[in-house]
Length: 288
Image 1 (tube, one colour):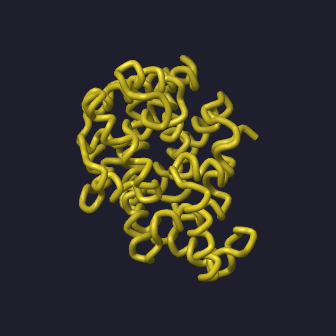
Image 2 (cartoon, rainbow, N blue to C red):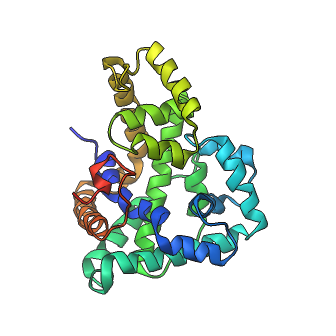
């Protein structure tokens, strides 16, 4: 049976992730001085941590190539302050969700209910050992329900992500192998997008994939073997255990209600074109 933490994560994740592909983010971030492209999404996610160094970011952005982070993140602090970037990200979220959901949904009681439930769940998270969650949790709560919903979903997402890194480290799975094996599940990026968005070259990817083949984790076609499938299941089970605290706080009935509300909202933004074609294999992010 699916774990409640996984089920809710799956339907809420599009509501968080849409900002990374929103034209509003590019427009507003370049308006404050950031360079167009991946700097806007990456620096805006890092900004709650403050003007951190390459080493600090590489330590928490597990599946990203440190070479990509070096090119995009420390230089961003010379173009705009982290505080300005954080505020601008919230502006972009507001504009993007208004476009994707429309005024009727934005003002609906269902969206307000989802925001309230998501905040209640997020209040069950703890900062201990969760650097990305802790940084985002220090930010002020937005007043508008749709932006508050995004912030709550982001807190839950970063809380889960921090725990996922703990599980990966505990299993001895480095960043690039983690990305390759997740892509092989069919539940994330397609391979070309994974390489581009995380900054890995074909050579780096192929070298890591060859080591995974030698270890019996993937086969010659890049598919998970029985051993690889078992490994990914162990990783997801461990991640779910570390992510269950906010859902225990929320309780079964409220979690199911948030799941249903989140699924409807995510379906709406996907249908409105929140995500470009050719990025995700995961059907949550594709209008089909």
